[in-house]
Length: 270
Length: 186
Image 1 (spheres, rainbow over the protein chains, first blue to last red):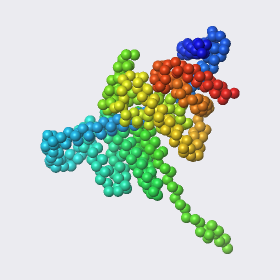
Image 2 (cartoon, chains in turn yellow, purple):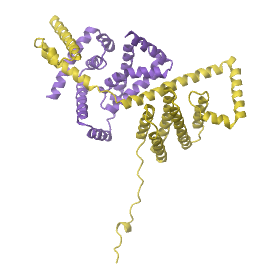
Image 3 (cartoon, rainbow over the protein chains, first blue to last red):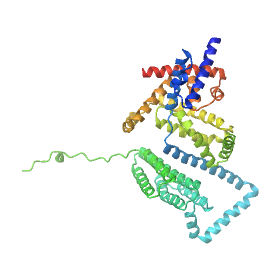
Image 4 (tube, each protein chain N blue to C red):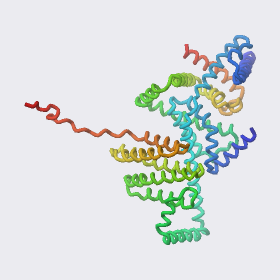
């Protein structure tokens, strides 16, 4: 038992010493040269196994790392917004605050009634650093939620995507801070993901039209992105759009009518 | 080193408060290690990408419960999630084997890849198959020590054994892995 322990301890210390020397540039033969057999062979084999183990665990592709970062960014932002919404609702429902909150709602409605179309245009062009941006995203969600059918929901989403892309382009051109641009990438991607989900479901139940429309939208989106100066946000949005395109099922081939016997065996001309 | 530790502790706190940049920093710090671990547990690159994404999505959801305040603790937590997610995928694959179409796609990808990429892929498969033949404890010890670069103490905590037991496992695991890889080559 003691012999086994001392063997093991000798092996551990020889292996650690060799790994440290190899990290500094020595070869495995140089490292094991000073050890007696059978320890030398055992350590040499172990070093080869460690080397292959370390080599085999490949690094992720940089494009994948970037796309996942954007997706996580969106997930963290969404979690934050959800929590803030709950906190806001809690504050809104507190009896003492209720009067004040209602007054605020009435005030906003009055302002909107007074400014009419001007206010609508103001929030349409708003970016995440504007207080009106929250109004815009809420209206987007309400529009989807109040759509009467799946087809109408898809219509709404396909109308939202170009507007969301414009926001992204405006923010990129205006050199807005990176977090804001990322938030806009996430917004486009989320809407696109929902549209793709709908297209997948529709095709599973026999309707391939949403698939065609979503594919066209992705093609348009990608075309517009190729016209923009290349940067990390544009590259990520391109990658995320391609990922969504790949999720779409292949479109069913149009069924060609079977050739009629006359067409298949035309009567020879006389 | 102290600055890094303080940086990680503060990034964890800020990420818990939904600071997107802080979470992105933690992600960038750990993603390579997590991916490398996962890629040695699951069959394909697509699987590794899928599981890594699931790990971080789960991390976003569970971050509030994270007690760690340093890089080692953060890694240990992510490693636990990764271990479960990889096991889930393998169980799923065992019950529902991959459709032939995916195999064809993988072959097409490989055909288009340069020679060294093919060799790397073959080597990864060989190492992964050898790892699968070890006992789960031996496998985890090797992955913790050489892929996640955990210390002996950290590895012992992860596998729920004392350092002496881990050293024994490590010795046997390396001998078995060397034998299996040697047998594969021979």
